[in-house]
Image (tube, rainbow, N blue to C red; front, top):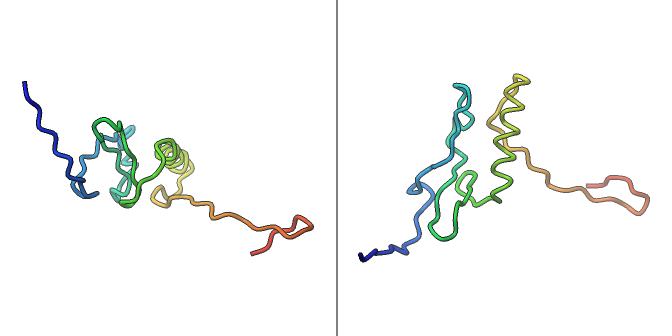
Length: 94
């Protein structure tokens, strides 16, 4: 049996989302900004708004959305930590 492998890179919009984003009737991905796709030999790849993200960060984001929903907060904002700089005394600076 011969298998033809198409190595053309798919765009984000062409990728099939295999992630389960509905839990208990709650849509954890209402804006379709999270995507989990099967990437052949690479395994699964995770994306947020079309940009690749770490696989574990994807699952962490789903868990965060569940926790936010339980507290009655918005689940569509991804929490991003941009970092903090400190001066010589350990005080936070911009």
